[in-house]
Image (tube, rainbow, N blue to C red; front, side, top):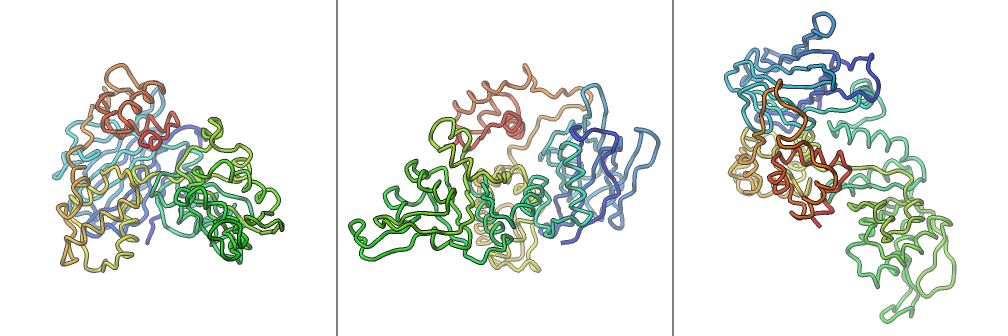
Length: 476
């Protein structure tokens, strides 16, 4: 995967907490699974002109003071020479970003809907110019500057596996923590790749032992102690021989406690001893054994809340929480979808040299909410390739119906930049209690909550993130 050097940088005159934007190219064209990295920070420009050129070219900002214009040219035949204008307006409330179409031939879209007037943009909005898709990120200047430096100046991130700022920062933290023996908690919704991140922790730990996994949600409570610590012959009915547990098998290596939030409280106390002293007892055996184990815990649950509720031991959480890595759901890292397409299609044995993807199919893939994340994406691609029998063209009709329906529910809340306020049309943003009540009433159905609050699904996700609300917990 190639990457482009971007000459634009956030303005150093602003504080680290000042929110600024960066425009990320997701990909596009008939072979979208080979994106080139292109990030355009917008901190020191008043506008960016997006247009078609003979080759990819980025012109640094020209002009004086705040009235500075940058230009980005792409070799996209579906774009007009001057296709769209990204605007930054600085006011008393901070920066506001908007998009205006420059009477292009094929129009400009935001969240799947063609804009007829200048449109205010928010964090996570999906922009479409010609056959190129973009995502707008709003982040504090300090984070933008740090991650852009890593992405383009050869920092410790050595693998272009993501364009997501959250994933890149998680990888940066992992670089620092992986060589130590500190335990790690990996938190994310089902299907976000927690197991893969655990494998990365172990791979870069330098430990000589194995990576061993226990799925705490899949093992019956009565058998979990034996699975974890082993047992002595005759310890219980059916124990016909001595058996080593997973802790012993992971000696010198890493033990992944998958879905650790489902571990019974009684067993949590025994696990605490291993973390504190490195010692344990096989079931029915009085001999104390030792094991040198690095622990990685994965969960989709809110462990601090479980500690407050008494369903998870606080002392165990304190021992496990050497570092917490939060993996964002796929709907919040759409900029990685084309990278994931490449990896998942190759895993399924697809010849990427032959395969093309229709623009409508890619738009649907980018607009779908992916409630089950990468796991759902992998299954959707398997279904699509079964219908694309020739293996040469993936069309919209090949995708599962729920993915196709994403094109029917585009974000149509498009108001003029000058008129739109950062609030929903009636009343303003809901309080945390109002949002929680709506989520409880609709069982975590984001579309239903959006209809009640007269907003879009993306805005509900933004509000939930602002209030630190775990949407997955309501779906359960």
